[in-house]
Length: 335
Image 1 (cartoon, helix red, strand yellow):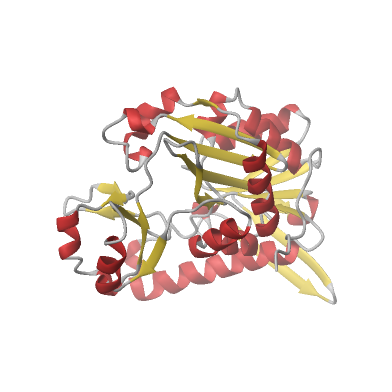
Image 2 (cartoon, rainbow, N blue to C red):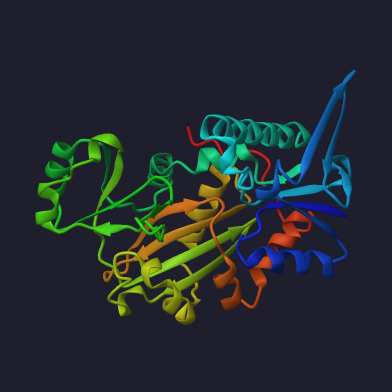
């Protein structure tokens, strides 16, 4: 069996764990390192007389995409090696054209093949507003939420709750004047900060009621297997509003946790709805013992949780890629 992993050179350590699991099971693995496309890796797609041939071409080897039985669409960083001196007016269109070509190639190849998971399914599942609506319909608790670029709406919303937090639709980083990189985390607002939310008119944000926590959970679902890690975020002053702020310390204290069967079933139905074979889900358990759904990341990190489960997550991903475990191939209809 042949498996193609679509990734980039600085991706999560879990990619290596899955590669090793696949190889132990007798599967050949090729990694398409997307940050080297299109500068060091080339694609050639031939569509002639109702036939298709796609070649992946690098310095040392050429692969025919037809030989692969499955693809793991992990993460892409296309165009990172395109030189800046090309000029932004040319570089940006070149990156977009490369992304569209690559994703179109996978989409056409993927007809009749197994892809974990398709670009279309990942994009659809990555919308936090849709996630909340579907989670509610499935019976999961969610925080009261406002998505807006109106400061007036935010101030009116915040009056209804003891505290509010804000986050973005997508994770991103900012650079200071010294080119230092900072990740943008979930922010818990102080009442006085809400008096001036200048700049909001240029970019909408997600505002939610702040939910008191006993614990936070990272749940990885792969196929029908559910792996839940309990994160003692409230033991860290820095990590109380967003455990990732103190993630380097807290990951050492993550331990496996058995979710109630009713919660697991709802999470599996969430995966069914989005037709995802992999998802990283964030939950909260309140001091009153209620579980609250925050979001699902269809390409979220898992290696640190994999360690807590003695690499069982990597094994589960390998089994789904090889067809040895349940695969999702069509979405659940809730309407």
